[in-house]
Length: 139
Image 1 (cartoon, rainbow, N blue to C red):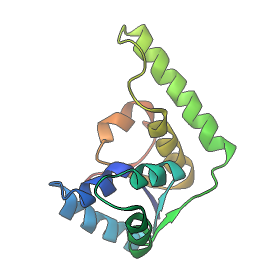
Image 2 (cartoon, rainbow, N blue to C red):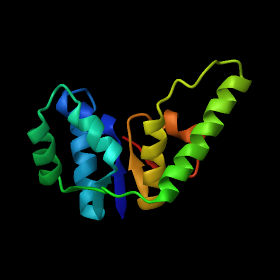
Image 3 (spheres, rainbow, N blue to C red):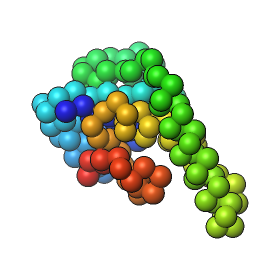
């Protein structure tokens, strides 16, 4: 079983937020069941985290046995674009204005849907609407 991980999971660990201990156990369990993966967007966001230095990110990912899918095929980008367009159109139709979510969230979800079996995230509500077929791991 391949488990994709969202940036917010690592951020919770590094900032020692309330769900941090649960996240460590969840990642250990996912590793025992298969492998952990992130897309390059998650890597970029992790490197920008104020709680860790760049070299610590790489060391952490290596220690936790988290692989980075450095090359993402066109299908990921096309799915992300398709779902982002649907989301932006829905917001405009509902009179909610322009898109508030970042396109990176759609890339993360598309990568998880097409190249993993599930996604670990602390923002489950965020993904349920736009990626209802994506299996989300309960934190």
